Length: 144
Image (cartoon, helix red, strand yellow):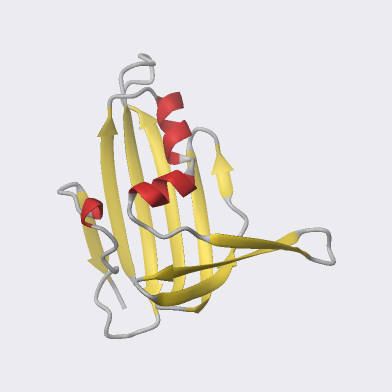
C-alpha cells in the first residue's frame, strides 16, 4: 500500500478553502484526474449503492464508493473499492484547518492523505497522474 500525504498552505480563510476543497469534482479536474461517472442504485433496506467508472490513461476503472464521511468544516473522507483497474482500494481524507483559529482571515493549512492499494505486487508507489500533482510538500511512503 502506498500512502501519500500532501500539505498546502493557503491564504484564503477556512470557509472559502472548504468550498474549494469540498468540491471534489473541481479538485479532481485541477489535479488532472479524469471525470468520474457515478450511478446510484436503490437497495432493499432503503439505502443506495454508488458505483463509479472512469478511464485512467486508457485503462477502464470501475468500483463502488462507500458513503462519504463529511464533517463541515473539519474533514471529509472518501473510500472506494475497485472491481476493475489498477487499484484494489483507495482512501482519501482532506483536513482543512485555520492557521490561526482566532483570526478568521489568517489562512488555511490543508492536509490530504491518500492510501492506495494496487492490484500488482510489483507496484512500489502511487501512479503519476499529472505534473501538477508533484510538490515539495508531498511525502510518499509504501508498505506491503
